[in-house]
Amino acid sequence: MKLPLLCGLIFVSAQIRAAELSAPQMLAGDWLPADPHQIDYAKLPRVPSQHIVVNSVREQKGVNQHNYLAHHAGRYFLMWSDGPGVEDRVGQRVKFTSSADGLNWAEAKYLTPVPPNSGPDSPLYNTRTDKGMRWISRGFWEREGVLLALATLDEAAGFFGESLALHAFRWEPANDTWTDMGVIADNAINNFPPKQIPSGEWMMSRRPHNYKSAGVDFIVGGVKSITDWQAFPVLGTSDELKAEEPLWWTLPDNSLAALFRDNRGSKFLYRSLSTDNGRKWSTPVRTDFPDATSKLHGQRLSTGKYILVSNSNPRARDPLTIAISDDGLVFTKLAYLAGGRHVDYPHTLEHDGHLLVAFAGAKQSVEVLRIKLTDLNAIVMPASVALARPLPSITEPPAEVSDWIDLGNEGETLYLSAEFTVPTRGQASAICLATRSGEARACLGIDAEGHLTSRLHQHETIGPILNAGDEAAVLVCLQSHKTKPDEMQVHIGKAGTLPDEPKEGQWTLLNREGRSDANLARILPVKTAWRKVRVATTYAALASSKVLDVK
Image: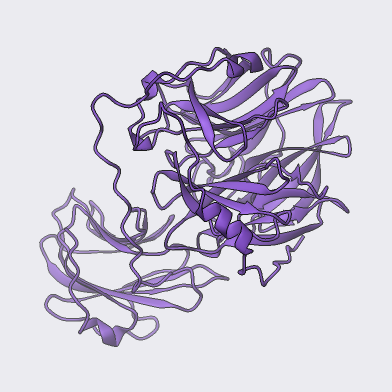
């Protein structure tokens, strides 16, 4: 179903804004160091638990992650993404299992079918390409007594494909299988399944396929039908925040609080508030709650307390911790759940006096902790959890480079010129346009065999062989599109000159199947001998643009 985006939501009530700007604190206590990035996680109190490895694909070198729990009809349910190689590649499916006690789990079975033309017998299997598909686990939704499992289907080139759609599958208890009910929201991937808000409506977060430029929002509805949703934006793309994987809950006064990891790299969580059932949201502000830039989950317990399970160590996804709050805004306790290794992607469920925490071990195993609520209540913080020898401070990320364009914008063009020396055989060289965090999106290179290569995100085009030791100049033209793949055109000329812009069909190398889909802000050299690098938005401006430092 198409999601209508309600406009006119830029204006936020003064009440929300004032409340949030005056209360950025999210972690408090005499035990807390002045800099929350200096917590010694070995000093945190340990929470007793029973630990179960439900499924593992370490031997197969596969991936298990995106864990979600539910309790329905007297049984616990657990689902996750199960795929080959690295997360979210072609051929990934969703598996599930169930348990009577949360400790002993049945043998895992597939919940989703093989993605179209992307099974193990496909040459695209276990690759990243927009010609192959993958399923991603998105959680359980109990609605009107029926248990639904949600999963997205899209192209597996990056995050996310243009056909991105959220599907629902209905559990059939008679034979323990799932029936595909079709798409419930197109151009949408949720972070957690819908929950009811005080109005009685259902709400979940939503990222469209181009969320890196369009931003994130919340979709509200699900009452008339499972396809009835309206979208309300939190914010669009921002120099201050790259919002990712939001979590929300209802506060005691029936307002809503949402938490965001910050992909810009501040290593703190951001928070936003809503007093009108998710229609308007305050501008997210940075809190003092540390974060490894990882997925988090939490909820309000039956005791009235709030819990937040996350990777709160800003330097690693280790350990997994649990924070406890009385009001859902400020957390006064922080305890250790599991660690000494890579652990992430938690999901929590309270039932029968226990809290279950599902998480991934190095993205290769699905594991569960079963914790007594009484043990959470018994947590006592030590006098201090500060590091005896503070670690170097985590520096703020650099500001967005304002004079670089977003290649996700339709019709915009970027030109690059440079000079280089062809490396000797057996060696490779490349220069890339990258995001602020260093993720290469558009690369020009020479491989070990001397081929000129062009890569737009996950698609590489191989060109002619160049002679080792030759010096040359290069002109690159990047053209972006929203409804079709981007174009990267490359032309080689003589060193010491700016190559002429060729006519159509006369470029040395063309790449018309990849996508950049990112704000490009850095030149990233890789074993490079590239020099005199210039970037401009027109060919005419290249000659007068400044030479960039690529060292």
